[in-house]
Figure 1: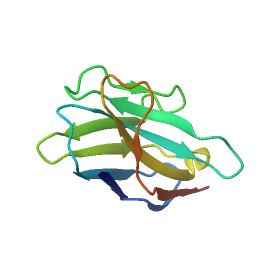
Figure 2: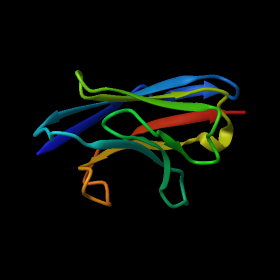
Figure 3: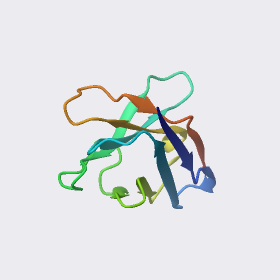
Length: 119
């Protein structure tokens, strides 16, 4: 079984920055993709950013392009999300997830970390 633990959430003013981290442990795959999702109250979960095992071709939701940066450290089995120029609409619970490259859906999820951006 894979365990994912997110950290780094909190309360920040609009325009500020936060850095989220997600550490994977337990069963390990030879390679896997990692991603961040978020869910705001009353809204559906949305994909925020993702990255391949190699670190190549990171992708971002249009709403966060230019403000968020995803990175990973395979030696430490971690994925990070640097969030800058935060907006109140970024307020949500942020989840990290992983999947094997042959899978289309993310297979394992963390418990989530709350990010609140005040105006």
